[in-house]
Length: 181
Image 1 (tube, one colour):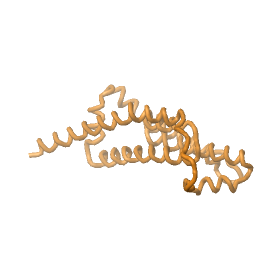
Image 2: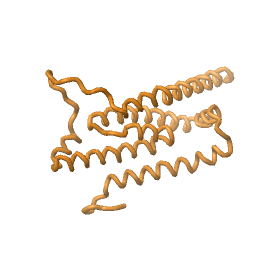
Image 3: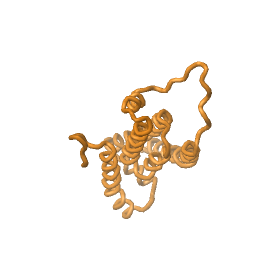
Image 4: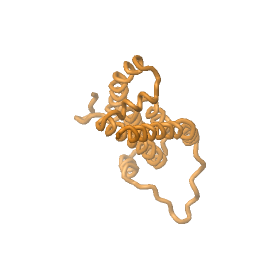
């Protein structure tokens, strides 16, 4: 990986992790998809077929929800654009792609802030600051295109997906209880 003064360039490291986070999961998913087709119920059944699979399944699902919240809050705090890309990456590949993509975009935004101000101190304060608003401050402007795309994506893709996933898991759970006797 490229280095600058002995340290790894974080932006390039995040891009490398994006590639790794796509290639490794898809190296397992694409052959499964070729063998089984696009069968969501069978996919969920196999994912939760045993306790270790369920452990990883729930871990990734919860991490995905946390990632969406983090992308929205941190992206808003830093005034980042293209926040819909990590969400799309999360839906298309998973946390292994969406999270490093967001970190790459975050580093890019912080570098842009450093270039605009000319000081690293401002970027450091951006990295460490929490959003504050004085008593007389105006409301934030209306959400931009990224927020609108996120609302559409979340409302029309993620929410129905998780609702369907929950129903399938509930059916599997109830089915396993009814045949456990």
